[in-house]
Amino acid sequence: MNKINFQILYEYNRIPAIFEKSTTSLWDDEHISKGMLEAHLDPDCDAASRKHDFIDASVQWICDQTGISKGQKILDLGCGPGLYAERFTKQKYKVTGIDFSKRSIQYAKEQALIKNLNIEYLYQDYLTINFENEFDLAIMIYCDFGVLSNEDRDLLLQKIYEALKPGGKLIFDVFTPAKYTNYKSEKSWEYQETGYWRPNPYICMHLQHIYHNENIHLEQVVVLDSNEKIEVYRLWDHFYIMKTISEVLKKAGFKDLGFYSDVSGKKYCNLSETLCVIAQK
Ligand SMILES: C[S@@+](CC[C@H](N)C(=O)[O-])C[C@H]1O[C@@H](n2cnc3c(N)ncnc32)[C@H](O)[C@@H]1O
Image 1 (cartoon, rainbow, N blue to C red):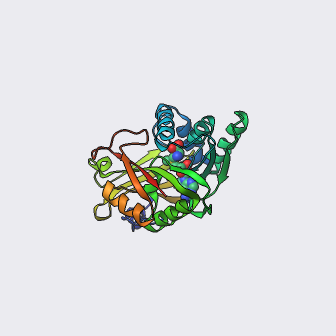
Image 2 (tube, protein in one colour; image 1 turned 90 degrees about the vertical axis):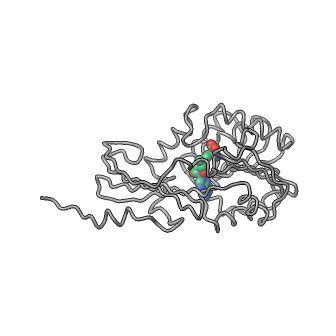
Image 3 (spheres, rainbow, N blue to C red; image 1 turned 60 degrees about the horizontal axis):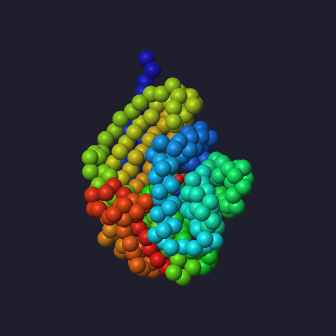
């Protein structure tokens, strides 16, 4: 009879240290990035980008709210396949989109060519940007801010601050504790013939955990595939309330903070699962 090494299963199901890294990149995996791009492009799916009707409303609200003029420059951090970048460009803004998913950036560049849109797309980790006084607006949309450790978050805010012109604005969103009200720590597993994580048969061990003192949620997926490879994907989310995010932004030098429930300008409510923040340099 075959023996199962339970020690390995225990090891992979331990609660990791906060912000412990994945064993490999999720974003540039050939199979996973394909599924992710499909999710971005599905107009009725909220998984990777928000539904496209929402994005239309969001772009319009951001233009109105920030009062930036046509021709001014927008930095789109984590632009994905360019859903926001394209819309802002059609409204006559000059957009630079940055993303470290090769597939998304490749798709975004192809679309810009096809649609004759002049957008600068960079395949780059946004933690490595080095712009100075260049942009009128920086956006970082769909709660990507929360995936950052405190050190990376502060570094990124410093880089965004440097990238903005004086008076330039930053708009981003984060998840709030309300998103996790009904979540509890749990572990489960499943077997798939083919699916989101692998094209071939695989076993997936899921772990969900909330680090209550730090306001951090972890979704961990351990994938054992038919090549007997084991990879661990960790999706971190540091969730914030108005007070905690204000402290972080003020420390980074931002002022005149404004708060909404989402990036389409829904009025602030402390029960909302998301919090949209506008800050000024
Ligand atoms: C949740 S998606 C949102 C995409 C886009 N903002 C939207 O709303 O359609 C987050 C995006 O951020 C990108 N991303 C995450 N971390 C990044 C990093 N350190 N540098 C550059 N891009 C990053 C991912 O590749 C992904 O495309």
